[in-house]
Length: 284
Length: 284
Image (cartoon, rainbow over all chains, first blue to last red; front, side, top):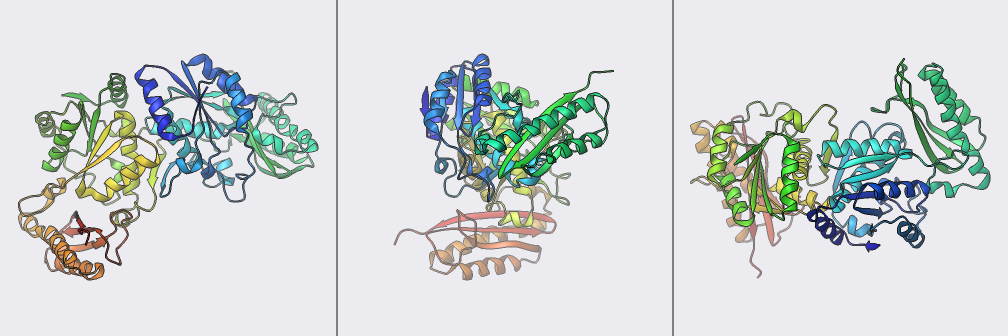
């Protein structure tokens, strides 16, 4: 696997691949790789000539008081996992080369960025859109791969690709889960053993919501139930949002529809976790 | 000359050129082409295998009450001029294909966009950065060409290219002027004959400023003189800004420096005109 640390070298490499007509599958990550990432690499490997992964803990998508400093970083272990996954190129830039002095451009997807996680992490999705736009410019991928756990992020990236005519396919891969249903996340390692156990309530509440929706319950009843179920777990310190949303606009659902996003953002102790599922009703 | 009206076709065409290894010079315009544009085409023609021009009166860079509806449009005449200039491809999309329903992404260059024209045209430079970012994605140029008359715009595009790692060279070509010094602009055709005559005061004031700077006058004296000279013209209805600025940050100069931007934005009747020059002092 080739490891590239300099943006200019990444650009030159990707232009060469483009001229050769190679398809490039790109998986942007913040490292601390888990099985969710491995599934993205596997999918990218199957669908493209070349697989590029990036590891970059992007400072501008963390707010003040968030976990930028503590975010787990372990490049050596990550490199082994990437090699095992058959990734061809790792792009792992340093922050000063991505945000040199005088950096002042931002990419913003209005509307989608303000809802759900955006309401609790102001500026977060502008930071995500900006860095992904930069990474796309440098990697010039044919296809990009994102995990469904970060559903809102994937919708924002899709919108940005369409709006800025980037011509990149955006593939959203299923969430990979622990055996008790907890969505894989680099932040799961912040959890103590009892917190880890308690965190299973999130997916359980989403599953309960899916069952209610299939039985015909309305969105407000379902949303109330999701929140109550999560709050019943004593180690939950905050429910930032929990309920039924429109999968396209991310707005709270008020009337039943064919497809629903059931999503929640929860703090367990000091650790913020998110999860979601899409519930589709069969045509009657 | 090939005329392309559909963004998807433009993208496919530019990807083919890239794979063939062709260099592409790109001149984005709003049409109503004048000799300033012709100089951009000529320069692009000399430096690239393929020259692409775009004509698109970009709705999102016009504010309420500005001249979007009245902006001169004459595609037929423009096509003749482009052919005479040896342009290979004209990209002339329709607004709905550039901004389809649900469009919600914006590219913003902070700081640079708020000063000078930005202070009088809120949102204007976000509209410019967004459309140029889109056009760059579609055309994938090696080099892009802008006129110095729109100095602030060229600085913002340069910053955007650097910040988003677009890997495009940004070439700023000298302002082309009428015989009395008035900078060529599509908006000059809004002027009545007497207004057209009066408009020469703008460049005269910039030249006077250059002479003062070379004689050692300080920025505040020079700025005051530029404004007074322009205001002495009775047909001037508003001086939005006029003075000496830092060519990099666009902030007002308070102490003398080696390089100065002397710039003004002026209304003559209802027509808003801008102009600027860079004054560089020789090392002493």
